[in-house]
Image 1 (spheres, rainbow, N blue to C red):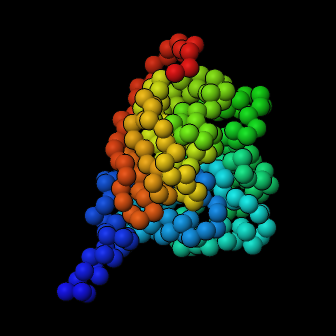
Image 2: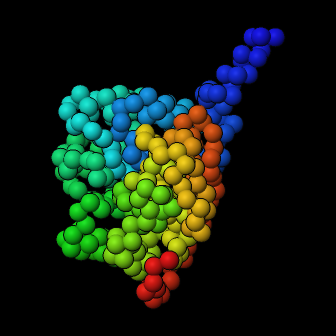
Image 3: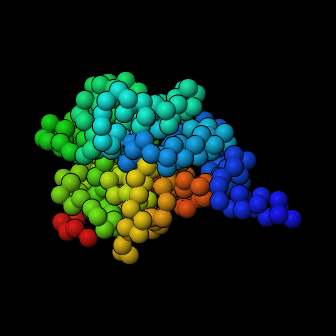
Length: 292
């Protein structure tokens, strides 16, 4: 009996790989685009390694091919030893399996990280890449100048993929107490997103997970707790569709045709949010002149 009690205690307090299959809520359709999203992770502390382990376990049943990084990728020191401890070691099994990481820069990152080969930035502070029927636009919201905005509008206007996804560090909408919504960035970026039919936006910065109710036809996610965490930092606002501020987490995303599926997974392997989004039909409209 004591051994049975001990086993039950273990099952309740930690994730075991075979449980990942039971918790997986994504369909894993043939030919789908599958990826993970992490933000504010580069601490080198045990929780970062534990989230990385959960990612590896879920990949056994949800074989994602790449990871988008939402900034604050290397927090603190930037020496070669820091890069090893804060990126190469925690994600080594994924890197060894051929998983690619595509980084956006955060306010705690060094711009020289754009030359760090495993981040796949190719020396650029902002860039785009395509996977299947999805185009990703990666921005540097620390240095959002006219040159970058001109590049973004040109890229968005010339893109013909079904899905347009933008990601960067500072959230345009957030219920986080510490930072909250970046309204100045929203004034500049959201009109372009609406005009050119961006459907989904990912950001970090606030050390919580939040899925925002659609704003002007766009779905916004904050995943800033893949290494850092501010427990209890989510305010109760009308923005939040779902949120989690009690533990570290990561996002798993799958896109198949006109459907996007998502699942937020905690450091212990719990599913804290999941659902699906049908690709909105882009209709040109006047952008509102107010900030909710």
